Image (cartoon, rainbow, N blue to C red; front, side, top):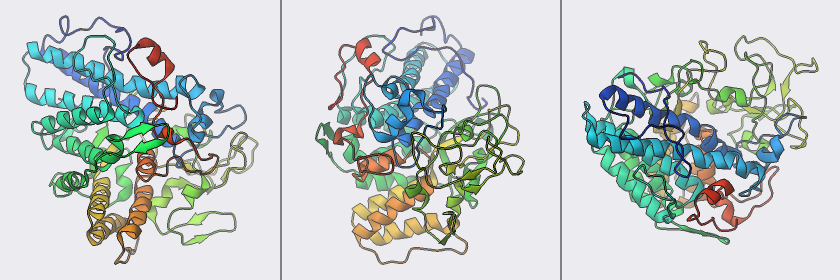
Length: 509
C-alpha cells in the first residue's frame, strides 16, 4: 500500500453531528474501503500542523506574528496568542484555539468509526491496521491533552456528551493505547509506505509523554501547576530504545531532515506525510517569507523575537545586528539582505528598497515588512505545485530522543552521561566539532539541555512544552508581560462548552 495521503469523507469532532453518512454499518465493507478509511485517519495529521502547531509556537518565545499594516491583524488573534491574553470567546479562542480542539477530535472520530468497522470485516494484516489506528488516535489525544488537559475519552463512534476525565487519567489511557499498539506495529515499513505508524513512532510519543509526565499528570488551578509524578526512568529507557534501534540514526547532514526529500532521512521517527500536489502539500514556508521571496507570493507573517535569534552560540555580531554563528542550526534564520529563496536573486520590499530582515521589531502592532528575522527551516521544494510542497513534517526525530535521554539521565543524577548525549547531537552542528566541556553539575546541565533543545528543535512545536516543563512559560519576554499561571492550559473554546454541557472549563477562564 502506498503512503497514506489521500483525504476521504468522515465524521467531524465528537461534539458535533457527522457531516457524512459514513458509519461502521454502511461503509468499510471490504479492504479497499478500510484502507481509504485508514488514509482519512492519517490525513488528520495535516490539520495539526495549523492548529496544534500554531498554538504551540506562537504562544512561545520562538514565533511572533506582528501586525504589518493591514496584514496579519485578524481581529488581534495572533498577538493574543503571543501575549497570552486569549479567552474562550476571544478572537484567538474562537479561531485557532477552537481549531486546536476540533482538528484532533476529527482524527479521533474517524479512528473510532474505523475501529468499530474492523470488528466486522476481514482485511490483510488487520491487527496491524488496528494498531496504526490506535496509535494515531493516541497521538490526537496526546495533542489535546498537551493543550487542554483532561479530556472526554471516547473509544466508540456514538455522538453524545461525555464528561472530562482528569488529565492523569487521560495520560494513563494514552499510555495504555501506545503500549498495546507498539507490541503489534512493525519496526519499519517498505520505502513506498513511509509515514505509516511504527513501533518507533509509538515509543517516540511515549518518550515525550514520560519527559513531560510531571506536567501531564499534574493539577492546574488558578494558582498554576502542582506537578504530578516524574517518569524519568521511563523517559530514559524509552528514548534509549530508539537510540539503540537499528532503524534510526542521526543524519550526517542536519538539513536533510527538512528538505523535500526528507523522507530519506534515517532520523525521522514519526512524520506527517506531504506530497507536492494540490491540497496535500506542505505550506509552512509561506508563513514567514516576504511576499517577493517565492512563487506563489508568500504571506509575510511569522517571525521570531530577537532574544531567540541571539540565543545561539555567538561568533560575532555585525554592525547591523546580524548574528554570525558557528552553529549551522542558526542558518534556519533569514536575516539581513534577502534573496528569492527559489532563484537566489535579490528582492525588494513593496516600496522598491532592498529587502532587509532586522532582528528587532520596533512595534509589534505596527511592524514594517522587514522587521523580524524569519525561520526558514523547511526549504522550498523545487518540484512544488503552487503553494504545495513535498517536505514531510517530522513530529519526532532521533535527535530529540538523545535530548530526552539526556534530560532524564541528568534528573536521575548522571550529568556526565547527559553531557555525552548532548555532545553527540551537537557534533554535526559545528565544523570543527565544538563539544561542551565538563564536568558539569546537575543544575548546570539543566541549562545546557534547555538551550540545546532550543537550538536543535526551533520551530518544531516543542517550545511551549519545554517552557512549561521548565517553569518558564508564563515569564516575561519580548512583547509579552508575565502571564497568569493557569495559562499553561488553553481554555476550552466556548462553542465546545455550548455543544457539550458536561464539559467543565479549565481554571481561570
